[in-house]
Length: 272
Image (cartoon, rainbow, N blue to C red; front, side, top):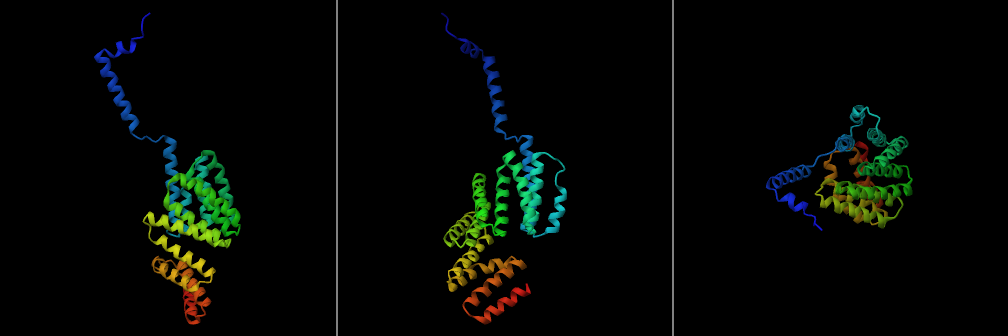
């Protein structure tokens, strides 16, 4: 009975060995170079388009520019394009405080996001739904959406988005008067922002903690927290944010019955 010797006979030929080595080299070279398939490139393009819209709204606070930007949406009717269209429209409507319209587009987007299984958009949809529901005083429903958003953001490894999510999660618990849970998530948000080297975002921690301490009637400690964050927030030169800071000072000084300072900050808030 003959033993199977074909592999040994095959590789005993030097020319065959050389050919095999060359083939193996080019195989390794090809597989070592990351090549995005066409669909993956399209997904990255759509994500970049959406992030630019978020920047226009969140950083520039420019609704007309955002609405004009919507005109550059792709004309396609495939699942990815419909996902982006509904996400984009939802973001603009939500920013304009049209939460009913925003939720409509978010639920439409969710159908496509679940179909194509894109974690980035699933996170964005659940996070925005949570924010909208909290603004509509549907806090329990908002908390459920925040938990879904946390599941997806952890898969993405995006610490800055995770920090923002925890901050907003804390706000929902604050509205339920669950101050311990609110403080827990505010603190987690602050730590993530700190680890990521973020600057002005960390100042919101002090404003949030001011609200908790004010709720506990610890007015001197509340004032100290507001003082820690106010310089950074004033430096952003945002009229709406400046108004909120001055109204916070008004609330604290009113509680402390320091009427002159309360009046001063109320006047400043009305002038912004």
